[in-house]
Length: 438
Figure (cartoon, rainbow, N blue to C red):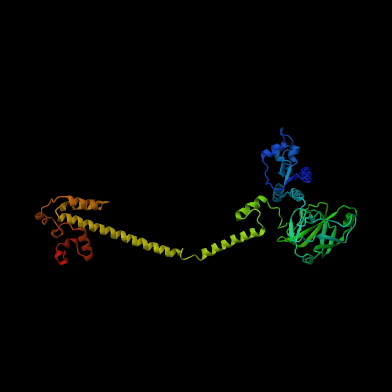
Protein backbone atom coordinates (compact mmCIF):
# COMPACT_ATOMS: atom_id res chain seq x y z
CA UNK A 1 0.00 0.00 0.00
CA UNK A 2 1.41 3.41 -1.06
CA UNK A 3 0.67 6.94 0.05
CA UNK A 4 -1.61 8.89 -2.30
CA UNK A 5 0.31 12.19 -2.35
CA UNK A 6 -2.28 13.88 -4.57
CA UNK A 7 -4.95 13.14 -1.98
CA UNK A 8 -2.77 14.58 0.79
CA UNK A 9 -2.55 17.91 -1.06
CA UNK A 10 -6.31 18.00 -1.66
CA UNK A 11 -7.08 17.15 1.96
CA UNK A 12 -4.72 19.87 3.18
CA UNK A 13 -6.57 22.42 1.05
CA UNK A 14 -9.91 21.30 2.52
CA UNK A 15 -8.56 21.63 6.05
CA UNK A 16 -7.03 25.04 5.39
CA UNK A 17 -10.40 26.19 4.02
CA UNK A 18 -12.05 25.07 7.26
CA UNK A 19 -13.98 22.16 5.74
CA UNK A 20 -13.53 19.85 8.76
CA UNK A 21 -16.05 17.76 10.73
CA UNK A 22 -14.62 17.48 14.24
CA UNK A 23 -17.47 15.63 16.02
CA UNK A 24 -19.31 13.16 13.77
CA UNK A 25 -18.59 9.45 13.76
CA UNK A 26 -17.02 8.17 10.54
CA UNK A 27 -18.49 5.79 8.00
CA UNK A 28 -17.90 5.41 4.27
CA UNK A 29 -20.58 3.43 2.46
CA UNK A 30 -20.94 2.34 -1.15
CA UNK A 31 -23.43 5.19 -1.59
CA UNK A 32 -20.79 7.68 -0.37
CA UNK A 33 -18.33 6.35 -2.90
CA UNK A 34 -20.87 6.48 -5.71
CA UNK A 35 -21.68 10.10 -4.85
CA UNK A 36 -18.00 10.98 -5.32
CA UNK A 37 -17.89 9.19 -8.67
CA UNK A 38 -20.69 11.44 -9.94
CA UNK A 39 -23.76 10.70 -12.08
CA UNK A 40 -21.69 9.00 -14.78
CA UNK A 41 -19.75 6.92 -12.25
CA UNK A 42 -16.39 7.82 -13.74
CA UNK A 43 -15.02 10.75 -11.68
CA UNK A 44 -12.07 8.79 -10.35
CA UNK A 45 -10.08 11.96 -9.61
CA UNK A 46 -12.72 13.06 -7.07
CA UNK A 47 -12.95 9.54 -5.67
CA UNK A 48 -9.18 9.17 -5.25
CA UNK A 49 -8.77 12.65 -3.76
CA UNK A 50 -10.31 11.52 -0.43
CA UNK A 51 -8.29 8.29 -0.11
CA UNK A 52 -4.87 8.35 1.57
CA UNK A 53 -3.77 5.01 0.13
CA UNK A 54 -3.50 3.35 -3.26
CA UNK A 55 -2.91 -0.33 -3.97
CA UNK A 56 -0.51 -0.80 -6.92
CA UNK A 57 -1.58 -4.43 -7.20
CA UNK A 58 -5.15 -3.43 -8.14
CA UNK A 59 -6.35 -2.00 -11.43
CA UNK A 60 -6.56 1.77 -11.71
CA UNK A 61 -10.00 3.40 -11.90
CA UNK A 62 -11.47 0.75 -9.62
CA UNK A 63 -12.59 1.05 -6.02
CA UNK A 64 -10.09 -1.64 -5.06
CA UNK A 65 -7.26 0.66 -6.16
CA UNK A 66 -8.01 3.16 -3.36
CA UNK A 67 -7.93 2.73 0.44
CA UNK A 68 -8.15 4.73 3.68
CA UNK A 69 -10.95 7.20 2.86
CA UNK A 70 -11.02 10.18 5.25
CA UNK A 71 -13.42 12.69 3.66
CA UNK A 72 -16.85 12.91 2.07
CA UNK A 73 -19.39 15.61 1.33
CA UNK A 74 -16.58 18.13 0.94
CA UNK A 75 -15.39 17.70 4.55
CA UNK A 76 -12.44 15.96 6.22
CA UNK A 77 -13.49 13.94 9.30
CA UNK A 78 -11.29 13.88 12.41
CA UNK A 79 -12.74 10.46 13.31
CA UNK A 80 -11.70 9.18 9.86
CA UNK A 81 -8.14 10.47 10.24
CA UNK A 82 -7.87 8.80 13.66
CA UNK A 83 -9.15 5.51 12.25
CA UNK A 84 -6.83 5.71 9.23
CA UNK A 85 -3.76 6.41 11.39
CA UNK A 86 -4.61 3.52 13.70
CA UNK A 87 -5.35 1.02 10.92
CA UNK A 88 -2.31 2.03 8.86
CA UNK A 89 -0.11 1.55 11.93
CA UNK A 90 -1.53 -1.93 12.48
CA UNK A 91 -1.01 -2.84 8.81
CA UNK A 92 2.54 -1.49 8.63
CA UNK A 93 1.70 1.35 6.22
CA UNK A 94 4.08 3.85 7.86
CA UNK A 95 3.79 6.60 5.23
CA UNK A 96 0.01 6.59 5.40
CA UNK A 97 0.03 6.51 9.20
CA UNK A 98 2.40 9.51 9.33
CA UNK A 99 0.35 11.47 6.78
CA UNK A 100 -2.87 10.77 8.66
CA UNK A 101 -1.29 11.97 11.91
CA UNK A 102 -0.03 15.18 10.29
CA UNK A 103 -3.42 15.90 8.75
CA UNK A 104 -5.08 15.13 12.09
CA UNK A 105 -2.90 17.65 13.91
CA UNK A 106 -3.60 20.21 11.20
CA UNK A 107 -7.36 19.55 11.21
CA UNK A 108 -7.72 20.09 14.93
CA UNK A 109 -6.91 23.73 14.42
CA UNK A 110 -5.71 26.33 16.92
CA UNK A 111 -7.30 26.46 20.38
CA UNK A 112 -7.26 29.16 23.04
CA UNK A 113 -6.40 28.81 26.68
CA UNK A 114 -8.26 30.13 29.72
CA UNK A 115 -6.74 33.60 29.20
CA UNK A 116 -7.96 33.77 25.60
CA UNK A 117 -4.47 33.75 24.01
CA UNK A 118 -3.30 31.03 21.66
CA UNK A 119 -0.52 28.99 23.25
CA UNK A 120 1.46 26.84 20.83
CA UNK A 121 4.14 24.39 21.71
CA UNK A 122 5.83 25.66 18.61
CA UNK A 123 7.66 28.99 18.84
CA UNK A 124 9.00 31.46 16.37
CA UNK A 125 12.76 31.71 16.67
CA UNK A 126 14.13 35.05 17.85
CA UNK A 127 14.78 37.14 14.77
CA UNK A 128 14.71 36.11 11.14
CA UNK A 129 18.13 34.98 10.01
CA UNK A 130 19.55 35.00 13.53
CA UNK A 131 21.10 32.02 15.31
CA UNK A 132 19.95 32.31 18.96
CA UNK A 133 21.89 30.72 21.78
CA UNK A 134 18.87 30.45 24.07
CA UNK A 135 15.40 29.36 22.81
CA UNK A 136 12.10 29.00 24.63
CA UNK A 137 11.03 25.35 24.56
CA UNK A 138 8.01 25.07 26.91
CA UNK A 139 5.78 28.10 27.64
CA UNK A 140 4.67 29.13 31.10
CA UNK A 141 1.36 27.48 32.08
CA UNK A 142 -1.85 29.46 32.56
CA UNK A 143 -3.47 30.23 35.93
CA UNK A 144 -4.70 26.61 36.13
CA UNK A 145 -1.21 25.21 35.59
CA UNK A 146 -2.08 24.10 32.04
CA UNK A 147 0.06 24.25 28.91
CA UNK A 148 -1.96 24.00 25.69
CA UNK A 149 -0.82 23.36 22.15
CA UNK A 150 -2.20 24.49 18.80
CA UNK A 151 -3.66 21.03 18.27
CA UNK A 152 -5.90 21.58 21.30
CA UNK A 153 -4.31 19.13 23.70
CA UNK A 154 -3.49 20.19 27.23
CA UNK A 155 -0.98 19.11 29.85
CA UNK A 156 -0.19 20.15 33.39
CA UNK A 157 3.20 21.61 34.30
CA UNK A 158 3.47 22.25 38.02
CA UNK A 159 7.06 23.41 38.18
CA UNK A 160 9.26 24.51 35.28
CA UNK A 161 12.31 24.24 37.56
CA UNK A 162 11.66 20.54 38.12
CA UNK A 163 11.37 19.98 34.37
CA UNK A 164 14.66 21.82 33.83
CA UNK A 165 16.27 19.80 36.63
CA UNK A 166 15.32 16.56 34.83
CA UNK A 167 17.93 17.39 32.16
CA UNK A 168 20.61 14.67 32.26
CA UNK A 169 22.17 14.59 28.77
CA UNK A 170 22.45 16.65 25.61
CA UNK A 171 19.23 16.61 23.59
CA UNK A 172 19.07 16.74 19.80
CA UNK A 173 17.37 19.44 17.73
CA UNK A 174 16.42 17.86 14.39
CA UNK A 175 14.26 18.59 11.36
CA UNK A 176 10.51 18.04 11.84
CA UNK A 177 11.07 15.57 14.69
CA UNK A 178 12.94 13.18 12.40
CA UNK A 179 14.52 11.60 15.50
CA UNK A 180 11.12 10.04 16.27
CA UNK A 181 9.76 9.61 12.74
CA UNK A 182 12.51 9.04 10.18
CA UNK A 183 14.82 7.22 12.60
CA UNK A 184 12.01 4.82 13.52
CA UNK A 185 11.86 3.87 9.83
CA UNK A 186 15.62 3.48 9.53
CA UNK A 187 16.08 6.76 7.65
CA UNK A 188 18.61 9.49 8.37
CA UNK A 189 17.83 11.96 11.16
CA UNK A 190 20.92 14.17 11.70
CA UNK A 191 20.96 16.78 14.47
CA UNK A 192 20.90 20.47 13.54
CA UNK A 193 21.83 21.44 17.08
CA UNK A 194 22.25 20.19 20.63
CA UNK A 195 20.51 21.41 23.78
CA UNK A 196 23.29 21.66 26.37
CA UNK A 197 21.24 22.79 29.37
CA UNK A 198 17.77 23.82 30.48
CA UNK A 199 16.69 26.76 32.64
CA UNK A 200 13.37 27.85 34.18
CA UNK A 201 12.56 31.47 33.36
CA UNK A 202 9.30 33.04 34.57
CA UNK A 203 7.51 29.68 34.61
CA UNK A 204 8.69 28.65 31.13
CA UNK A 205 11.55 26.33 30.15
CA UNK A 206 14.44 27.59 28.02
CA UNK A 207 17.33 25.71 26.47
CA UNK A 208 20.91 26.72 25.62
CA UNK A 209 21.72 25.43 22.14
CA UNK A 210 24.94 24.60 20.34
CA UNK A 211 23.98 24.65 16.65
CA UNK A 212 25.70 22.50 14.05
CA UNK A 213 27.06 24.19 10.94
CA UNK A 214 24.14 22.88 8.93
CA UNK A 215 21.63 24.02 11.57
CA UNK A 216 23.12 27.51 11.83
CA UNK A 217 23.11 27.83 8.04
CA UNK A 218 19.44 26.74 7.88
CA UNK A 219 18.54 29.48 10.37
CA UNK A 220 20.56 32.15 8.60
CA UNK A 221 18.92 31.15 5.32
CA UNK A 222 15.50 31.41 7.00
CA UNK A 223 14.72 27.81 6.09
CA UNK A 224 12.93 27.33 9.43
CA UNK A 225 11.05 29.78 11.61
CA UNK A 226 9.68 27.61 14.44
CA UNK A 227 10.99 25.21 17.06
CA UNK A 228 8.83 22.47 18.52
CA UNK A 229 9.61 20.37 21.63
CA UNK A 230 9.01 16.65 22.04
CA UNK A 231 7.78 16.31 25.60
CA UNK A 232 8.00 13.55 28.15
CA UNK A 233 4.48 13.24 29.60
CA UNK A 234 3.43 11.07 32.52
CA UNK A 235 -0.13 10.96 33.79
CA UNK A 236 -1.06 14.09 31.87
CA UNK A 237 1.85 16.11 33.29
CA UNK A 238 4.97 17.40 31.54
CA UNK A 239 7.95 15.96 33.41
CA UNK A 240 10.78 16.47 30.94
CA UNK A 241 12.02 17.15 27.44
CA UNK A 242 13.11 14.48 25.01
CA UNK A 243 14.23 16.53 22.00
CA UNK A 244 13.16 19.45 19.80
CA UNK A 245 12.68 19.95 16.09
CA UNK A 246 12.96 22.82 13.65
CA UNK A 247 9.69 22.98 11.73
CA UNK A 248 7.44 25.20 9.64
CA UNK A 249 4.29 23.26 10.53
CA UNK A 250 2.80 24.79 13.69
CA UNK A 251 0.19 22.03 13.95
CA UNK A 252 2.73 19.23 14.49
CA UNK A 253 1.71 16.50 16.95
CA UNK A 254 3.99 17.53 19.81
CA UNK A 255 4.17 15.19 22.78
CA UNK A 256 6.09 11.94 22.97
CA UNK A 257 6.85 9.74 25.95
CA UNK A 258 9.70 7.29 26.35
CA UNK A 259 7.93 4.79 24.07
CA UNK A 260 7.24 7.19 21.22
CA UNK A 261 3.56 7.90 21.97
CA UNK A 262 1.69 10.22 24.28
CA UNK A 263 -0.31 8.25 26.85
CA UNK A 264 -2.53 11.27 27.49
CA UNK A 265 -3.32 11.94 23.84
CA UNK A 266 -6.85 13.31 23.65
CA UNK A 267 -7.61 11.85 20.23
CA UNK A 268 -10.26 9.59 21.74
CA UNK A 269 -13.42 8.98 19.75
CA UNK A 270 -16.04 11.30 21.31
CA UNK A 271 -18.79 8.78 20.55
CA UNK A 272 -16.87 6.10 22.42
CA UNK A 273 -16.29 8.45 25.36
CA UNK A 274 -20.00 9.19 25.57
CA UNK A 275 -20.77 5.47 25.60
CA UNK A 276 -18.22 4.86 28.36
CA UNK A 277 -19.63 7.70 30.48
CA UNK A 278 -23.16 6.37 29.94
CA UNK A 279 -22.01 2.89 31.01
CA UNK A 280 -20.61 4.42 34.18
CA UNK A 281 -23.94 6.09 34.85
CA UNK A 282 -22.62 9.67 34.70
CA UNK A 283 -23.53 12.61 32.49
CA UNK A 284 -21.89 13.12 29.07
CA UNK A 285 -20.30 16.34 30.26
CA UNK A 286 -19.01 14.84 33.52
CA UNK A 287 -15.56 15.88 34.67
CA UNK A 288 -12.65 13.49 34.80
CA UNK A 289 -12.91 13.42 38.59
CA UNK A 290 -16.58 12.34 38.46
CA UNK A 291 -15.78 9.59 35.95
CA UNK A 292 -12.85 8.34 38.04
CA UNK A 293 -15.04 8.33 41.16
CA UNK A 294 -17.59 6.20 39.29
CA UNK A 295 -14.86 3.76 38.30
CA UNK A 296 -13.60 3.65 41.91
CA UNK A 297 -17.12 2.86 43.11
CA UNK A 298 -17.40 -0.01 40.63
CA UNK A 299 -14.07 -1.38 41.83
CA UNK A 300 -15.20 -1.03 45.44
CA UNK A 301 -18.46 -2.86 44.71
CA UNK A 302 -16.50 -5.64 43.04
CA UNK A 303 -14.19 -5.96 46.04
CA UNK A 304 -17.19 -6.10 48.39
CA UNK A 305 -18.81 -8.79 46.26
CA UNK A 306 -15.63 -10.87 46.18
CA UNK A 307 -15.21 -10.54 49.96
CA UNK A 308 -18.82 -11.54 50.49
CA UNK A 309 -18.26 -14.61 48.36
CA UNK A 310 -15.30 -15.58 50.53
CA UNK A 311 -17.10 -14.98 53.87
CA UNK A 312 -20.84 -15.50 53.22
CA UNK A 313 -23.57 -14.46 55.68
CA UNK A 314 -24.53 -17.57 57.70
CA UNK A 315 -28.05 -16.23 57.97
CA UNK A 316 -28.34 -16.63 54.21
CA UNK A 317 -25.88 -19.42 53.32
CA UNK A 318 -24.74 -22.75 54.81
CA UNK A 319 -21.88 -25.06 53.76
CA UNK A 320 -22.84 -27.52 51.07
CA UNK A 321 -22.01 -30.56 53.25
CA UNK A 322 -24.38 -29.35 55.98
CA UNK A 323 -27.10 -28.65 53.44
CA UNK A 324 -26.75 -32.15 51.93
CA UNK A 325 -26.88 -33.73 55.40
CA UNK A 326 -30.05 -31.85 56.36
CA UNK A 327 -31.61 -32.68 53.00
CA UNK A 328 -30.86 -36.39 53.39
CA UNK A 329 -32.24 -36.42 56.92
CA UNK A 330 -35.42 -34.73 55.71
CA UNK A 331 -35.80 -37.29 52.94
CA UNK A 332 -35.43 -40.18 55.44
CA UNK A 333 -37.96 -38.56 57.76
CA UNK A 334 -40.35 -37.99 54.87
CA UNK A 335 -40.05 -41.63 53.81
CA UNK A 336 -40.67 -42.80 57.37
CA UNK A 337 -43.74 -40.60 57.68
CA UNK A 338 -45.08 -41.89 54.38
CA UNK A 339 -44.51 -45.50 55.51
CA UNK A 340 -46.21 -44.90 58.85
CA UNK A 341 -49.13 -43.19 57.16
CA UNK A 342 -49.52 -46.08 54.73
CA UNK A 343 -49.38 -48.67 57.51
CA UNK A 344 -51.88 -46.69 59.60
CA UNK A 345 -54.20 -46.53 56.60
CA UNK A 346 -53.92 -50.29 56.00
CA UNK A 347 -54.68 -51.02 59.68
CA UNK A 348 -57.67 -48.67 59.59
CA UNK A 349 -59.02 -50.46 56.50
CA UNK A 350 -58.51 -53.85 58.19
CA UNK A 351 -60.49 -52.66 61.23
CA UNK A 352 -63.34 -51.25 59.16
CA UNK A 353 -63.68 -54.40 57.04
CA UNK A 354 -63.47 -56.67 60.12
CA UNK A 355 -66.16 -54.60 61.84
CA UNK A 356 -68.41 -54.92 58.78
CA UNK A 357 -67.93 -58.71 58.81
CA UNK A 358 -68.68 -58.84 62.53
CA UNK A 359 -71.83 -56.77 61.97
CA UNK A 360 -72.99 -59.18 59.27
CA UNK A 361 -72.96 -56.50 56.56
CA UNK A 362 -70.49 -58.43 54.39
CA UNK A 363 -69.28 -62.01 54.29
CA UNK A 364 -65.76 -63.08 55.21
CA UNK A 365 -65.34 -64.44 51.69
CA UNK A 366 -65.45 -60.90 50.26
CA UNK A 367 -62.90 -59.50 52.70
CA UNK A 368 -60.02 -59.16 50.19
CA UNK A 369 -62.34 -57.50 47.67
CA UNK A 370 -63.42 -54.84 50.13
CA UNK A 371 -59.86 -54.27 51.37
CA UNK A 372 -58.74 -53.60 47.79
CA UNK A 373 -61.74 -51.34 47.25
CA UNK A 374 -60.96 -49.32 50.39
CA UNK A 375 -57.31 -48.90 49.34
CA UNK A 376 -58.35 -46.86 46.31
CA UNK A 377 -58.59 -43.06 46.49
CA UNK A 378 -61.66 -42.23 48.60
CA UNK A 379 -62.51 -45.93 48.84
CA UNK A 380 -62.62 -46.15 52.65
CA UNK A 381 -65.07 -43.28 52.92
CA UNK A 382 -67.34 -44.84 50.29
CA UNK A 383 -67.09 -48.22 52.07
CA UNK A 384 -68.23 -46.64 55.33
CA UNK A 385 -71.23 -45.10 53.59
CA UNK A 386 -72.00 -48.44 52.01
CA UNK A 387 -71.79 -50.36 55.30
CA UNK A 388 -73.94 -47.81 57.07
CA UNK A 389 -76.70 -48.19 54.50
CA UNK A 390 -76.27 -51.94 53.83
CA UNK A 391 -78.65 -54.44 55.42
CA UNK A 392 -77.43 -57.33 57.55
CA UNK A 393 -76.93 -60.28 55.25
CA UNK A 394 -75.34 -62.76 57.67
CA UNK A 395 -77.49 -63.86 60.64
CA UNK A 396 -75.85 -63.38 64.01
CA UNK A 397 -75.88 -67.09 64.81
CA UNK A 398 -73.98 -67.80 61.60
CA UNK A 399 -71.36 -65.12 62.05
CA UNK A 400 -69.58 -67.07 64.77
CA UNK A 401 -69.34 -70.04 62.45
CA UNK A 402 -67.45 -68.05 59.86
CA UNK A 403 -63.77 -69.02 59.44
CA UNK A 404 -61.52 -66.88 61.56
CA UNK A 405 -57.92 -66.80 62.65
CA UNK A 406 -58.88 -68.78 65.68
CA UNK A 407 -60.29 -71.54 63.46
CA UNK A 408 -57.48 -71.58 60.95
CA UNK A 409 -58.99 -68.96 58.67
CA UNK A 410 -57.02 -66.14 57.06
CA UNK A 411 -55.25 -63.74 59.43
CA UNK A 412 -55.97 -60.06 59.36
CA UNK A 413 -53.20 -57.58 58.56
CA UNK A 414 -53.03 -56.66 62.26
CA UNK A 415 -52.64 -60.30 63.24
CA UNK A 416 -49.90 -60.85 60.66
CA UNK A 417 -48.05 -57.74 61.92
CA UNK A 418 -48.44 -58.98 65.50
CA UNK A 419 -46.97 -62.38 64.60
CA UNK A 420 -43.94 -60.64 63.06
CA UNK A 421 -43.38 -58.46 66.11
CA UNK A 422 -43.59 -61.44 68.50
CA UNK A 423 -41.71 -63.89 66.29
CA UNK A 424 -44.64 -66.32 66.02
CA UNK A 425 -45.40 -68.30 62.89
CA UNK A 426 -48.75 -67.42 61.35
CA UNK A 427 -49.84 -71.06 61.43
CA UNK A 428 -49.32 -71.11 65.19
CA UNK A 429 -51.37 -67.97 65.80
CA UNK A 430 -54.68 -69.79 66.41
CA UNK A 431 -53.10 -72.13 68.99
CA UNK A 432 -51.52 -69.18 70.79
CA UNK A 433 -54.57 -66.86 70.69
CA UNK A 434 -55.48 -67.36 74.34
CA UNK A 435 -51.91 -66.88 75.58
CA UNK A 436 -51.64 -63.79 73.46
CA UNK A 437 -55.08 -62.50 74.56
CA UNK A 438 -56.14 -61.95 70.99
